Length: 485
Image 1 (cartoon, rainbow, N blue to C red):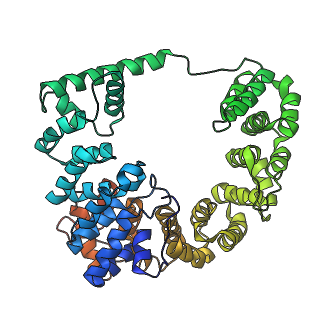
Image 2: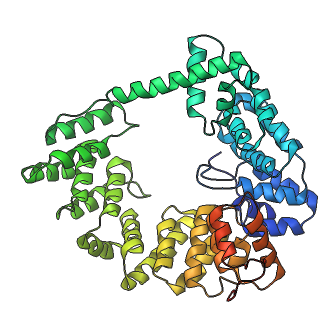
Image 3: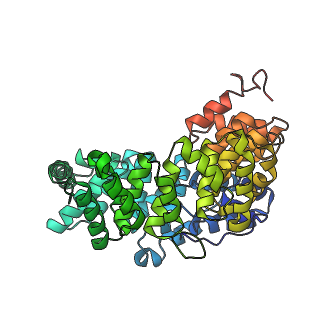
């Protein structure tokens, strides 16, 4: 699910997987059967690398409406045997959100499919939330008994019901049921679960948060290391660094420097983080040493190296900025972090270093490299016009719709052709922030642009920020505003 197979960017499937505006435009021009097959492939095989960050559901729902597609493939996916075997919400989350948007556009077959899945599917809380946002009371009323039947009477069932009520993203359905919309028996159990959830929250506020260190520098460092050894998947070096900020004084600096140089992993990480946050004059060399410790060919790894890089990126001193200029030439993780700092905080004099790092990162890591996000932002902030060819390549090839949006913002600042080029297709992009950018910049040179601006302005599912941007370009009678370009 988190390593999707992305088709080439020049294919219809590749465009739709990326959520590009050109995906919609090409799909509407392609044979309907081919377009629907590619669309359904995307909905049932989530193409996003980060499903919690990237948007696709509204994008796919709008195209599905334009193609007047059916829901047989979606139904088969939801009720497949894998729904019992693979209970992760990522397997069906995109399909359920897609159906929720269709329901919002008035598709009763989508409402019915969500209702059936809520009654029988594994990821029923997500489906219930979609219905609670868009369905009328009669649909929710009919689901009270089937949903409550999932929680058998008894301590375990009551505890699970309490958790479900407490964790619901949209509580409308539970409120209806508590008010008696699904019958007195359902209402009594839901009210009891809501009361127990409130009591549990009150109890958690009274309980100690967990183990805490003693209040001296050695004790805090020992606590950080001991906690890491006991639970390596939950390192507490950042919490330890916050504790150090409260108790460490000038007399503790030699101990902290020694811990940051040679201490055990978690204690060393806590000391590095604390010294970096304090802008200690000796910490930069220690951060370089820690970040370069790993012998792995791919660069620094491990808790110490990661903490060193993250701590350096947080620094705001002039000394850190000067060190970044010295390190930005390096072809390793330290060089990447230094270039990222220059992209965020550097000046015009640093444009060459940022551009060189951008090109180097694309060559070595491709259009989805992790370090590109900050560098792309920096090219726009510094208005590096010569970065436009690289930014256009990233825009076309990245499979991350979030990174593509950042590339579009950078192109708006660096590429004179953006308004008449990529900005036009961005009006159909899957990310609302990218559509907002396009609404402000797209050159109105053909009827497609004007029609899409009008469509976005009246679409009830569109974000308010996008509609505000659209209305800044269009007058009250749906004509072009004065000065529109």
